Length: 89
Image (cartoon, rainbow, N blue to C red):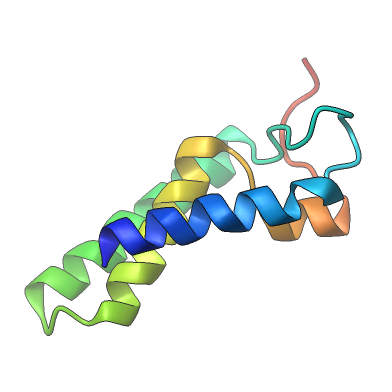
């Protein structure tokens, strides 16, 4: 199930990267450090909750998705809305 969340995340990123307006080459980072840490904490928390309770596939999927976004620093919803929490480099 965790692998499925990663695969769906990659498909999600591929489909929605055309919404990334800041770069002609596709998806760019649009999640800042604090946002990434929050998503990582939520993902790990959901995974632990799933492991310690019922092994709910939904919780495992959501945790994988949150961790995927934290690792790649990219959120499709942010890209679709034109939002960017990354600092200017």
